[in-house]
Image 1 (cartoon, one colour):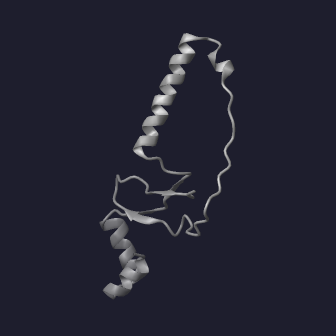
Image 2 (cartoon, helix red, strand yellow):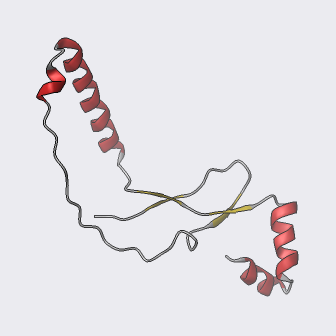
Image 3 (cartoon, one colour):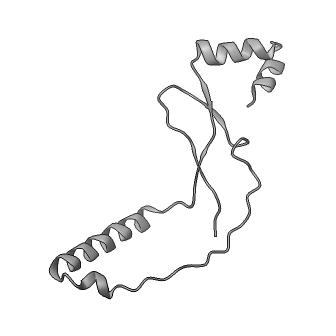
Amino acid sequence: MTIELIGESLNMSVGSVFTIMTEDLKKKKLCARFVPHTLTTEQKEHRIASSEDLIAAADEDPNFLKTIVTGDESWCLEYDPETKRQSSESTNPGKGRPMKVRASK
């Protein structure tokens, strides 16, 4: 809810609402931090296991890293018109920045 809407619903000026929110309640307006995509717990665990396997293989054979072939992925992403500014929220002191997935498959 925006400061303007809060002021209108309480019949108070925007300046008074802003002062109460920032000085008395110690709230800050933070924009969401965009992340490229979110991973499930299962995907995170799979990445950890794969990394541990690669480290173990590299420890056993010094030439192992020379045998790895990498490639690139092409992603088709949907467009999300919400801007970073539109996703901002008022947060309490000590609370982290909210996260928002930038785009999804």
